[in-house]
Length: 158
Image 1 (tube, rainbow, N blue to C red):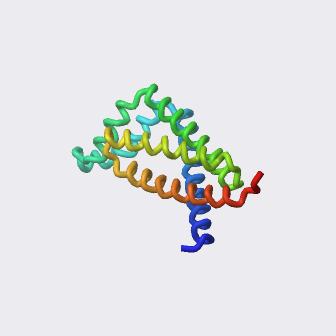
Image 2: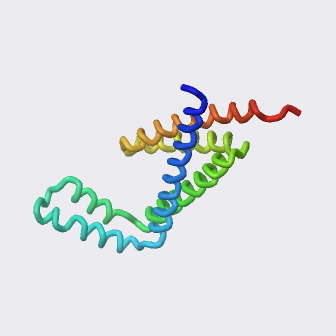
């Protein structure tokens, strides 16, 4: 693959990370603003018809149980987590797209920490989405590392 294609993949992957970061920020803000009672009401409304038709519906019963166990502390944790995680990634994406030298190692470190946390969470949840996200993060890290090496090669020597 030529360097132009690799750079295009780098830019696309960073833009996707940026879009994901914005969604996390919006989700964190929304979660912070919505009460746990509103979440329970929403889940009740969404699952009511399904449970009338099939009282043992796997998804609806689990979603309903989850909403009733969703505490204020849990809500606040997820709101903080999503917002902080999203803001960090937004700042790193801006730095990467502007070619700021500090953004490359900072992005590698942040993604490395996110990967460690995602794998830790996977051991608890076994959510396949975490593995997909982790695989994407590993690919993005490879592209960032490649781009960083190229940027450093073109720096003037002192």
